Amino acid sequence: MSKKIIRRLIAKGHLGPAIELMIEIAPQYASSDTENMLYVISGQYYSNEKAKLGGTIRDDSYDVSRAKINSSITSVLGDSFKEIDEKDIPEKYTSLLNEEPTPTQDNSAVGNGKKPEAVKSDVVLFLSANPSQTALLKLKDEHSNIAIELQHSAIQVKSERAISFSEFSKAIYDTKPRIVHFSGHGDLKVPEVVEAYRTRGIGKPEDNKKKGIQEEEPGIILFDETKRNPFFVKASVLRRTFKTMVQRQNIPIEAVIFNACHSEQQAKAVSEVGVSVIGTSHEIKDAAALAFSTGFYSALARGENIVDSLDWAINQVMAYGEPEDRFTLYKDGKKIDI
Image 1 (cartoon, helix red, strand yellow):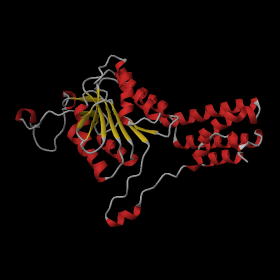
Image 2 (cartoon, helix red, strand yellow):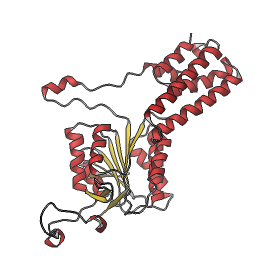
Image 3 (tube, one colour):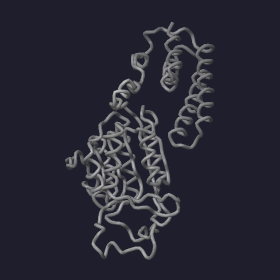
Image 4 (cartoon, rainbow, N blue to C red):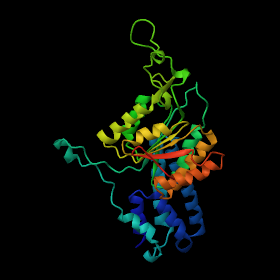
């Protein structure tokens, strides 16, 4: 009665493994026409999942397509397959049925003034900004590459583009990701293009640089709240933001990636709150930045940890003429050798 095993896979939402299993055993238990039909359904399934990961399909459209695929494979299983011998079903499929459900937060701790335990996340939050006043980057290509690398893994990709600082914070809070990945521009100091601002006072804004009040500090460039101009966010502000998210809001962030130029000091500062952070030691070519993401998430999808995924990515980056130490890793404020 091993059709029941496949039905249980479908019921638990394991549509991809169910389709793969049916294709695997089709030569023995179904006709060649059925096998061809399953390949068509498989293509529909992975196209739908890719669109979801890439953010190119609305949630309601994704759900409708998934329901149709569910119905199709259930119908094929019932109408076109002979009864299946359980010994012909590989253990990798039956083991999926024994997985524990995703744990939820323990809300009983809230009334005692304690933060609920962090729920393990398997989400990559892709945040990007490329204001029109800055050099054009292939951020859509990078997001697409990441989604493709992770499409057959359990890791999801969620994205927010053209992001402002308030949206940056809210996206992290709402998503509670395992990895925060920022792609865009970084700089060693406030670029002149983003220095203009209004003050809530009377008269001409004072020149803080001349007065020696404003210290030079590296940061990243987001959008301002109008979404028309660049907005420079310093490393100290980033550190404070992630401190709030990790230490006060108890969000289980494992790693932060700044795939942007001159982001090593940002990485060092943010790592002081207790997460692994990757940044760049200098400028980096856009093609090399894309190669980094492809390599890093290719390794992550295969079960590698953050350090080994970075090691994998460095090999890809070097092929584009960047030095071995272009990407650096920090933990607890200390540089980690790769």
